[in-house]
Length: 123
Length: 190
Image (cartoon, rainbow over all chains, first blue to last red; front, side, top):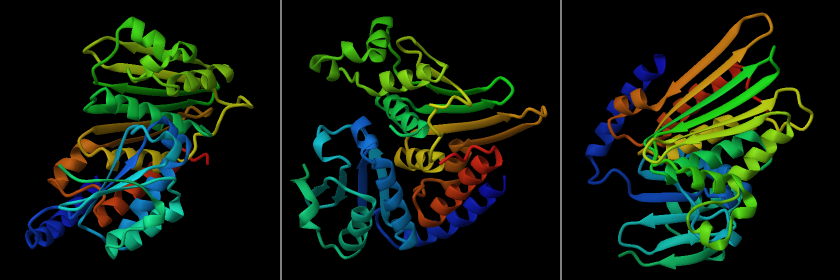
């Protein structure tokens, strides 16, 4: 498989970069993917985040998805989790808002307070 | 849900809640037999017969059962398949995973398009790094020719040795790989 060879090259390069950092990722983005989230466009939000992270070449960000979180009326929902900081939950996220979250919050560290629906201190 | 791939995504999320570690997805188009068959098989905790019955019945769902993670996703998928001259089957046993088969009449006027399969699979694969996925696409043409595509995350992850799947270059590579397979098997219906 051609892809596997290419993956090996990327891995070798990435491992060199990662040696320079103490952890694999600086920040984690979690997209809520329950039935209501999916119906409200969570897949498109996930895609927008993945695209934006790749476009900006952010190699220290981890993007994952999770199930229903009990915030059905605010779907799609996105959490931004950063070490030693409050977890920020954004609600009613659209692909456009998602791109803005990456640009402002992830890159510039500026929380987009207008879109925040919950914050939570980490245990 | 506007398309079949959104239903698929919903079922995948069910499997993940059932602690699946491997999810196999197969999409089969048999043009001669006028069939489109979606199969999702997981190795999660499975269900007993009673839970399986409840999972398929939207009217059975009370608040109490909702907490037992029985929702609207499966009944909607089932309804859509049956409405299109197809059928819906579930097979499950506690400790033995769950298999779901949804069949549609391929040319049925009410059949939803497959939708954006690339984004669905890519999102699920990247979004659940702890779970492995096997995607198989098959199209049996009238001419007897068969188009196939297979994508398996296990060799990919072995090669990556812990580099995240959303690592920019990896993401682009995986996206191209899946997209090419979908185009090759003519399953792009957006």
